[in-house]
Amino acid sequence: MKKFQKLTALLLSFLLLACVMAGCGKTDDSDFPVNTAPGDSPSNREDEVNQQAHETDQDTSGTRAMTFGIQNYGGGGIDPAKEINCAWNVSRYGVGECLFKFDNAMNVLPSLCDDYTVNDDHTEWTFHIRDGVKFSDGCDLTAEKVKASFERLFEAGPSGSSAPQKYLEAEAEIIADNASGNVTVKTSKPYVDLRANLAYPVMVVLDVEHTTDYDHAAIGTGPYVASNFREEVGYTMIANEHYWGGAVPFASIELLYMGDASAKAMALQAGQLDLAENITNINDLRSLQTDPNFTVTIARGVRTGLAHMNVAKGKLLSNKTLRQAVLMALDDETMCSVTVGGLYTAGFSVLPSSLDYGYENLTDPYAFDAEAAAKLLDDAGIVDTNGDGIRELDGQEVVLHYVTYPNRCLNDFAEAIQQQLASVGIGVDLEIGDSARQWDSYQSGDFDLNGSNWTTVGAGDPTEYLAAWCSTSGANYCGYKNEEYDALYDQLSSTFDGGARRDIIQRMQQILIDDAAVVVHGYYNSSMISRNATVGGAAIHTADYYWLTDEIYPAA
Image (cartoon, rainbow, N blue to C red; front, top):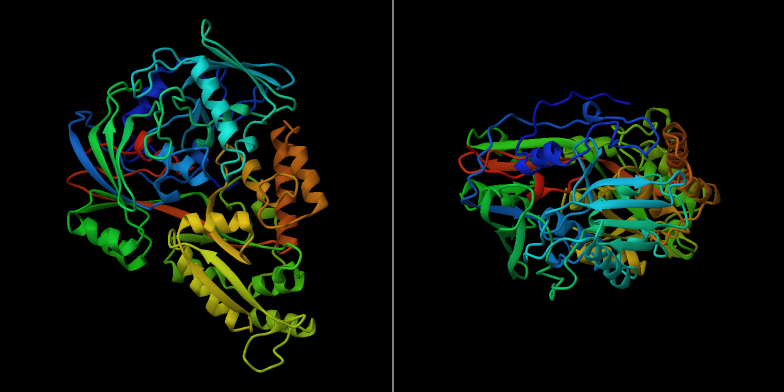
């Protein structure tokens, strides 16, 4: 595993994190092991995750307002049952919280649950709900409330992209006891670490009894209350007067949707924004980095930029030779280092090289070689017969429908890929829309290439992420099927030893590489940019979860 320097502090680490870690009960390794299933030896990967930060004082006066320029995902919805982007929104906006959470090293920490037990078979978990927590409407968080939130999620969520059954089986028996404050979950299959699954934002806990508008006014336990939603504009977030985790530093935060990276940069420079995330125009970013009035934080995280290939029967990319040629025609190193200015680190596997899943042991049989790609197509009879510059496969012109959206440089990659594939006679019909359209195309299958940026270890390890290529998972939007891969994926659910799990995951990666099953651009380096006079800066949480819960506080 690549080792990274342990940081002394997280820039813009919201006071909540310190409060939770210091005052949540059993947090020592012996009583509350982190990043492992109970029974394994505890591990701490804090020094193995690259986080850039600065030390800065915290001001908890809680009287100031802030304006934050962000990307609009899922139309701004915050219903975790509706779609995966909405689940991310409700967490990032500081509205909802889960029973557990992750720190920057992907260790599991207690949140709304402060203690737990699990049986030897890992099929019965009992979670004690933290005393004294209230929803933002002033109602107490109870065991029954947690159960009701999960039940509502399973009623409303399975048909959408949230797919809560990926984190907890729909057949699970949930027993709530308000007297003891315990929620017991009994499952038909073992979970290596159910805590990590329940930390995923889909599993956010909401007040089902009193929420009337899940889309834009869901009631949660987080430090902020969503109000004044304006379509395509944003929200006003109001400090939650009932917040259990300590002082909420901002009285209000204006979340403004700004999809254009340069527009965010100009708004910062004009004083219209205090903070912006993911300015991906490299010229703008470099200008802000050299300006003493701004703090720019760039951190290597655990997101992978990729384009899923639709290999379903009848699709162009069901032809493996064509897929191989596509990969060989793409110069990922140049795209990552030049096209997007180093905001990605080039790589060829679906998991980042910074994670401990055997990247250094993997081999890439389809490294960049445009001449070899053209020859491969020629030898397979995938040639241009009418002289229009586009090859044909079984009488059909090879024009790939590429769906993506303009965030995290995805549109830049798509345009570069369009040009590079054209050089070997492969056409690309490029559709750059919004994130909602991109998700819709996953579910409808209306794509050949689908460009996105995914958190790879959102539930503590990559099991949930790797479901995208498992034909039996219910999350396979690519039409991919490999019996060995499916069998290995099934093994993960019953393999508890960390070393054995790493070996399985390494093999799964190599299968996808050998099958030319996905286009990987590289590994994303997140950024936060702030005006120094208003906000001290920002730290990037590894899983990119906690914008308003753990990362934003005013400068002293």
